[in-house]
Length: 110
Length: 514
Image (cartoon, one colour):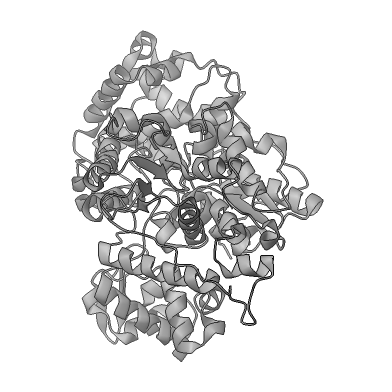
């Protein structure tokens, strides 16, 4: 499978996760969101950018609690919870947001 | 919400008319060649697959007497037919346990019995064709190996073992399931199902310590790789990562803190789950278990305690000594291994924990018995301990508790719908349909007793419910960890909660002497 963005082809796995994390560019996220019928706002980008920074440092997506805490610190305590994140990413912050950010899908009992 | 029909919750559970091939389109993604190789399996379907599969079946028949017995003794009485949650949720005839077994049994008959070899048509014996293999791949991944059917079988035939054997045969010919096999490879490489490396784990645990201190004013530690600790906690990596799992992990930490014991997690054995069991692979199951032994030896611990993980507890309780024993280097005065619920239960019995049940008054709880704990293990060293102990821990933590219907709990419990290696998005349809019987029972206690939350002691159950509850009109956060309830209720010495209860809090709500 693959996704076309700005005339470039990006390889993905069966579920649409980018095959090569290093190929990622912001327009990929925008295109993936569009395919799923949503538009990325600044609020979405806060999450996506944090995911990428965290992955850069730790080679894994952040735990839900690490993510909510970081977002809470940045955007205010009322937004530092998974309810807010699920409003942004209805299919789950860990899975949907990771996909947009070009990260591999978290595996396991999650 | 879904492009398939979500089963409707009726007033009571109805047994549907069986239909043919309703869910034969459901099958998980295939494992990639490199994940197959990591586990010692061929990368993709091999050329002489029929021959290898039959040989593998013969090998298993020789190795596991139970497997041969289960294939031989079924009398097709039909007692199992309406006992599988996947049958009840899909109405597909092949999801009746006897029919699921028959997919393999008809091939067994063809190659391993006299009548099947010479008069196949007379005895319903079938060649192992590609169509049969496809059916295996589909329907043996629509079985969560929950063993509910075996409870009702007069002969005790265990479909889970047949399912495991089928998956093992398929792996041997290069047809593996992506979800399980990718994850097992990840444990070998990184130490847990998630692929959470040590620095990320350390960072996550540090964050949890901060959170507990913010909530209670007490420094409760979540130590990692600490040599010389008394207890090694082996818990599913979902406990570090997901909700409501992490709330349970904080509960264990508080219990250990209050008990005054020294404990540690291990980054090398940072996973309780053992997916080797799901794919029926003794070798992989053993390799996964040996990581725990190694961590216990390296860290020099005296005890091993398991966190809330269903199938991990079955492997730990029933097989760990065979797989990775002897554990003669551990303190023999304690159960080897011990379940976190046993640990907490003992402290409660000795009145060593102060519990403020009112902290959970916003909830009315019911308990979901996880299949591998209920039907594959014990607890506390007395019969039925695995049913009593988690309930006692819950009841010590909250004021409002009700059980679901008798035929849906204890050893007749319904699987969450996501066990046995099925907890993956590519199997969402079967997961939603298989959740129906449990959801039906939940609906009933919701209406009768005003139950608001479902508690569980299994990472798979928790993730499965968080995902499937909304399909049935519930909220995702209605699933809670048992030790989350403990965490809410436990009153730590020197905490803000203690000060508030005892009326010694200062104006800012903090304990004056803390």
